[in-house]
Length: 315
Image (cartoon, rainbow, N blue to C red; front, side, top):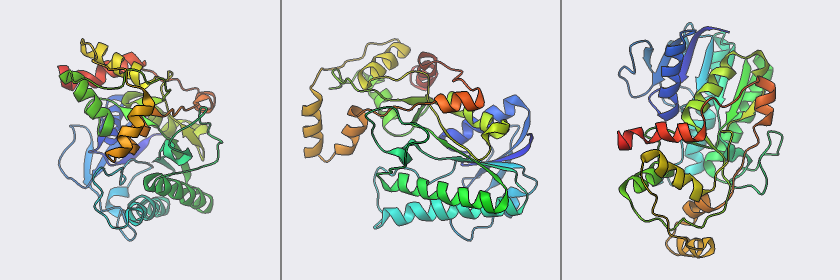
């Protein structure tokens, strides 16, 4: 499958990397969609897209498009100001996504690739999550992604448009947002971190690996109407991750071995229980179904992915 692909959220962390990859490959004409305006790069056609909500008009962005990668979303909000966050997540991630998908099907789009979240299966795991595990979203963002997945599946059955769902865990790369970006900054500054005794296991996915999987899902015949879990080929403890980030920077991680139980208790006292959970709990992803169905392997190793991720911090 080739043609013109609309990438929503094209000015974001994942979307911009995907647009750049599509340009390098040269097999697709990429249309970069974002609400921010401006030009991402020389090769992509730029379009200003509407807000993610019911009733939005996507006709201009979808004209002549044969596939969509929907990376735009209301993501985790660190300083939530909404009185009803779940309603806001649903407005963007469910209503807005299904509005786009309905109009895409009406205009003849053949394949719709939806960037979801491993959070659909839960926030932690005692064993690696598998693609056939029952959904158990625990926060508003994950609930909205799961509801969007269900709506897209029904829409695909009704219209014949092929729907592909990709559920990544934490994505790392250059200028990564959220907690991973903060951790990298602290390691770069030599800040002592009380994370030297964390023996958990977490699956991550490097930005280049996720983008490679999204491109595969655009093109592979076996991807149609399936769900795929994303991940690197190696799981890390938080302690090991920080040490390897430091190695990628050519520095030494300053890690203090504080017992995880003490860290959890202290985090609860200061209202940072969720952050502690993300740093201390295990969350593993079994990507064997993705590998076997698509013949896909993560092309970039963890150490190389971390090396690329730290470039903006160390030059």
